[in-house]
Amino acid sequence: MNKSRNYFFDTVFTIGVVALAFGLNLLIQYIFRIQTLIPMVFVFGVFIISLRTSSYLFGFAASLLSVLLVNFAFSFPYFRFDLFSPELLLSALIMLVISFFTCMVTKKLSLSEKIKAENEKEQLRSNLLRAVSHDLRTPLTTIYGSCSAMIENYDSLSKPQIIKLLNEVKQDSEWLMRMVENLLSITKVGAGNVRIKKNDVVLEELIDSVILNFNKRYPKQKVRIEIPEDFISIKMDALLIEQVLINMLENAVCHAKGMTKLTLRVNTDGNNAVFEVIDNGCGIDKDKLSTIFSGAIPGSSAPSDGRRNNMGIGLTVCAAIISAHGGKIFAHNLQSGGAVFGFSLKIDESKNE
Image 1 (cartoon, rainbow, N blue to C red):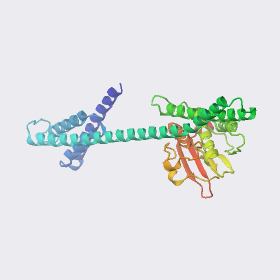
Image 2 (spheres, rainbow, N blue to C red; image 1 turned 45 degrees about the horizontal axis):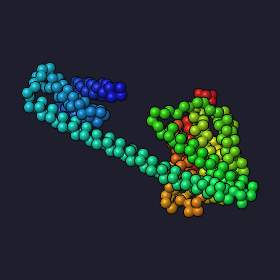
Image 3 (cartoon, one colour; image 1 turned 60 degrees about the horizontal axis):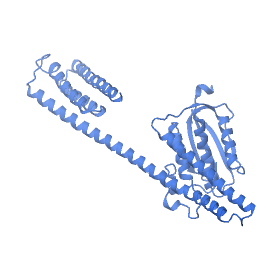
Image 4 (cartoon, rainbow, N blue to C red; image 1 turned 180 degrees about the horizontal axis):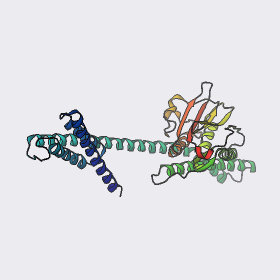
């Protein structure tokens, strides 16, 4: 179906460009009485057709049609075909060569772009696999160690010790569940046949839900909220955007060493809503800024003390979700210390009015 549609549009495009070239040549001849520009206009038309269509066929057809039009309407004797004219044969050959090489270059560029896109996808898969394998190892080891300790030393362990081990298992299990949620989000957003279902979401309700769920995971961490007083409605998948904000807040808690203040701020910039998670911690390493949303984990950044490091996979999820919403994601350090993670989404102005 798509192939037939493409052929239809290519056919219409070819006929339209040739007709436009023919009309332009008539205008040039009528106004300026110049014959030398006529072949050049048709050659340019053949070049455009060969560049924009999906098959060699359209460029060749445009070449032959252009030569016949020049021979019929712009060459003496007028309005008669002279199919054996050396000029006609040479013009046809030149246009066919131009069409062939233009199509060949276009195909090579298209193939090169496809190869580049596949390489980028493969690199993303490798980065995600490396991030996942790195992040899952530590909690699984902890769960296995705690369970083994309880099985092997059940009679000698006191009740507080057992509760402590079970709490460690519970915490690591909850963390693994969040990792699985992140991976499922990437799968949902990355699938070509899945569309983001956007609904009108009131900003204040979204922030309330984010803070409520974040406080369940980090009850001791206070978050300062700064949002506009005006009513703001944004089209989005509320669950996915909520996950983005929670991931960014969780990233600050886990990685912003020395942080004493965490702020969730929302501003309006024209018809965009700009969400920012701001901390006053240690900031982002310069060597990580370029790959922070790609899932890549430089070898030097892997923690050597066995601590969990879900920054790579969590921020990769954020980037995928914001991209699927048509927004922009960003991160940078503050001159005063700390870092800002944020993204922008389009505001539905009619709803807000």
